[in-house]
Length: 359
Length: 274
Image 1 (spheres, rainbow over the protein chains, first blue to last red):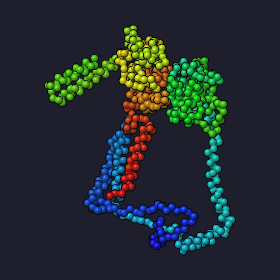
Image 2: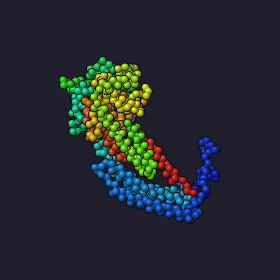
Image 3: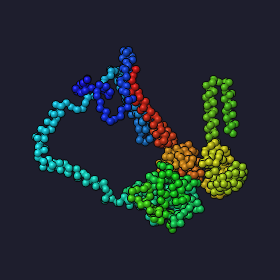
Image 4: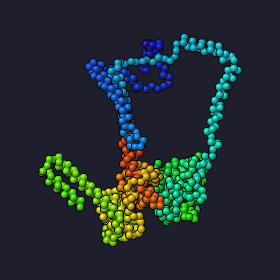
């Protein structure tokens, strides 16, 4: 039996001269046969030296092309600069700089790959496996080293010393684990209450986004849609976007007779004007694709559809709940105001969300 | 009038052909075509301008009524009161007619989810007559003033208004997008400023209405400016924009050509040279 350079036994998968004990295993007779290594074919560059020479010349040209492309990229950087006052200058800069760098890298890549494929020595090498088990002498020596180390360090003898060192190592990561407590948002407002309330309060005027001007009921003609935020939101210095993400509202007017309102929500609309949260109850995209004839609202992310005539109930798509309605009224100056906050948390579900808001 | 002019330039071209070298003929023909085209554009803009300011003469209204009775009343009913097949046009205003008829959406080619744009069926004069007639039925949005259609407003402000009010349906690059059940928000990149303005003011089909209390004429002018700026100046800023459709076309491109070239390179690297 052959041996490899490590002294291991060389075996193939189907050595017929090796006794095998199959035990209770069922071996198929037509098992997979090792097809072996396919016969070595010589390359044309090995057989004909002039072809090898030609290939070499092509590769040299390729590398020079790469050098030229790199230089071109440097030239392009200066020839097509980005002008801060002309955004369109980005186009030529990106195009020529990018083409230069791409050609430089591609030429090197193709050149190096071709060098190894066509010119470097082409012969098969088989690296045989050897067994992982060491020789008996090596194994004995390893055991001896461990025994000596144990003896000299006193690891097995001085048990108190060893155990106190282990205890110190166990205690070391504890401060790191305890500081993970900072991830618990104890000092900040309760996230559940943050998710449950928006800036809307009784008497808050509905104002246009982005101008911040209030809306008169008479401005909202039939078929209109207004993108609304609460008054004062656009002036917030901190957390404006967080507040806006929860408080955005879509204001629409429908012919009064087309609204199929629940008796308890009759007072939430004003003369056919209704306001609904713009945050999808699925995963929170802005639902603002309003079709004024079908009165459907479409969410662009996952195609949930809501019927505005029936309190924005879900008529298609993955959303599970209707869009929350903002109860509105009109103040003494004729401007639209909120009667209060939404009666339920806006936007997608969260773990602590109660499920009895619409019960 | 244009036909006569065109025929004249063609005749002139034929005459010169006998006298001069073929190259001069081509140059003359080109100059003639440019002149004709320029005159056409000037006259076209002239009619539009005069149409906007033309007084509602009784003659025009009567002509509009006659056109309406023969072309529109089947669906919209006699006197535009509406039928089961078409809505009432009372109070939609001249702007709605100019938009719907001027873009070829009306007369509608078939009852369907949405009236598509098609070749315009009426001349500018007839469209104006129809618009004047419908405007007499009840007050409604009129043909927009020219000063708001020059695309010379504040593009940055217009772009913000566009993102808040329009982009969810029409796509942030105004390339259009899908709605429900076969409806769609059309591409706005090549729509004329007048039609953009009229669409905002009247809310054609399923588009909501953006009246002057919601988007003032200055707001509408800025939005038009932003659409023109985006399309004309920055439309191809990053190279070929693949229709500005976002992840659909860009994803398809990179899956087919990007991953395709990676696979081709891998196959080449792994093949044995002969």
